[in-house]
Length: 425
Length: 86
Image 1: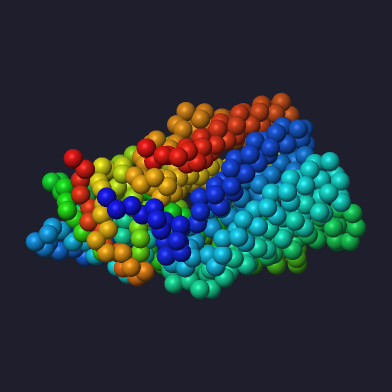
Image 2 (image 1 turned 30 degrees about the horizontal axis):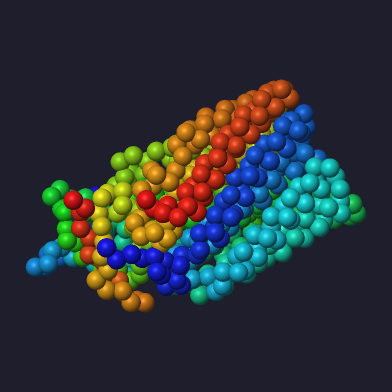
């Protein structure tokens, strides 16, 4: 058998060295544990949370920047060159972005938790620099793209959202000390929507157009609904921004309608992929992904109920929790548990010849424990927010932390198997 | 998936089945090749024509017990010969 090892890492194959994506994935696994720990610490403030420094703000950013962005950036570095059919211009800026983001996120969230403005600011500046490197690398790759236009459009939209959310985030952090913003709470809400639905959400639904058919082995998805979801998502984000800046509720309702339309297109496309799947057993990753799709719908429904002010207790906090921990975290942990052994298998083939079996590169036990704890954590924290019961939130956060540790064991196991000589065995 | 829905093209030649996936976007090359390998009685050799090295295919081949040889490997074209492992 002729082996691909001699050139798996070459530009023609668009496959980065394994250490580049895996460092992001391992960091994400670590930040997941820290996010639940910070939520446990700030459990008494979660139900009534409406913004401001403290452990809840730290938990949100450990989850969004630490877990979600780290995962999305690592996956993008590895997968976008495959989709766009253009290798990254260089490997080292990808590594640089990691070494800016890692200390940046640690310092920023530490400063947020303890309300140390200088530490928060230094961390935010480092994280911004890391995100800027990612944005430039990705923009350069998209610019040279010969790949799938509808996926590229999602990439550009996500990058535009990234620029907006970083600008808003910088303003908000400076405002903690300066107090110059007239509507800090409104802009904080816009920052969260642009981060959750804009950057992370658009990246997730865009990469899903390729990733999910690849995972389930279905034909490539029709471009029409993909273009519709991108257009509706972009329009929705624009309308929400205008609704916030001009304080017009009707614009926010229109934004929600667009977001619902985009989600409808997305869920229809995902259903199409699943119904034409050639793979008989999709396994635990798809339990998590299916759950996340249900939670996306629940998030939008709850956002509508919040906007209508129907008196649901602590609805804003519950909406934010379902957006970050429900839809996005559940989806990305599902993607990670599928993609990490897959990437490890490709890279291990390059090291020692035979492509190893995916089943030899995963860790089923820790993943089952993670799934059980994660689902229980979502249920308990949601109930705790609704009932304003700190003990329930603490119980949920503790279970989430146990699940996060189990997920970290899985991630380290995959990386260790990849690092061993003869991993392909 | 019916034969009409399988992406790319295929033809029978004296040296076995050929599957041409050139010009397809991911994941269609993967789907086309695996669909042909999964047909009853198929044990190869199957020659797959691609316009890039199919790094995502190798773990799937390993799962299904298929091996591969490179028949051609350039910057713009790859030919793999696939055989069921005894």
